[in-house]
Length: 278
Length: 278
Image 1: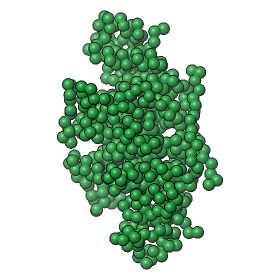
Image 2: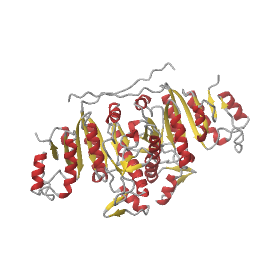
Image 3: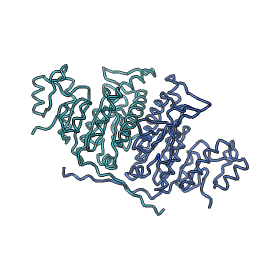
Image 4: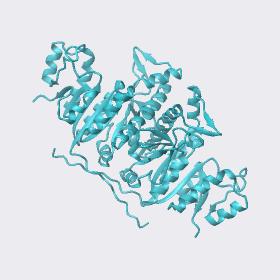
């Protein structure tokens, strides 16, 4: 004995937190991914990265002869598919992102929701469709203080689209939903901005015209845009979720192109900024 | 602003640390694994788990048509094999172990050496054989204070047999070596015991007789056993490594059967105890 356990903690950079989600289009191109990770690393403040899947899981399933299971057009996560996404999301993609972030000097730790019990979900109940091993987030899924412990210790959490039920079962959970739930839960402790990076400049008036970006939307404007049928139907769930996150405490939501994240470092606007009515 | 970042830390249970390595024989049988993880969880003190691969990686390689590459009888980690072990060790096995530990109330976090930059290695230089993507540990590979931060925050690290080079490259590293290097590095901060769990009761006088267990060996006895040619040749590298770890600060090394770990909880001897001469 005689040794004293020292607690090393790093003072966090202010009280801002960015929860940033990247999708398959960024992950599938190693150059795009590396450029994005550079911009992510350069961003000041506390950060959490959430990543989706990309094509690799589908390719691996095909090689292994596992057929994609669809019921009424909805994708089902059977036990074989769960094994594939555990390998690809939790192993291959997550750990390669972590290794790249470490190369850039960003002290990343790759996580599923099982690690640290950070995201505990409930297996979706079977009603008309059995979705298989899919986990749904509720208001008790995330313990923000526990995640803050990891952030305060100087680590950057990198989450993939996997959670657990607390009974030993891993579950597949949508990465957009994970990002939004993390942002809401952590908004109790941080001034939190949620950023969805995808392959478009942001919310567009005309989906075929990248110059038709709508630079900011508040709830009132959102109602107008919906009533004028300007917003594309595919965008509606994303925007509904975003405004829901804002009403639950998230300061702002940005929807934009992954290449444009660097603008944030220079305090320039990027993508579509969603925020409260003033 | 206006919020204050609170630092949550958990006081660690004394200054003891167990670094416990399990091999493929435990991992390949889900019942054995769950029983082991129960005993691991019940053990008081700080703990780190290190796990090997098991048969799953070989099975996946076969299914994908990746042939095992051997040069002069030594296994080579080519880029395709590295992808497979990243998926299987870092994803499938590691995350399922973490989910089981969480089920048991053990706050595990699954890691490669890339996560948190915990184990940085050097790609093995090509001399007569190119081993491929294999990382060798040296005296600068592990920063014990950084790992202590994670342990003090209340998490149980679970390492798989993957490391990184700090330049974005994941590397395959022997799990026995990772366990021994972690134990040596952390012996600067903790009273550390290194435990290798395998399929035998411990070091046996007669390899075919489980009742011929040698219950303890110190360096002097080790020399005697070697000169009498009692110790089986396959055991020599394991024992050399163990005594090397002890000479570098590890308090004791135990080599025993995974089923017998529970004895430790009751302070009963288990396996073969290797320690310094008195």
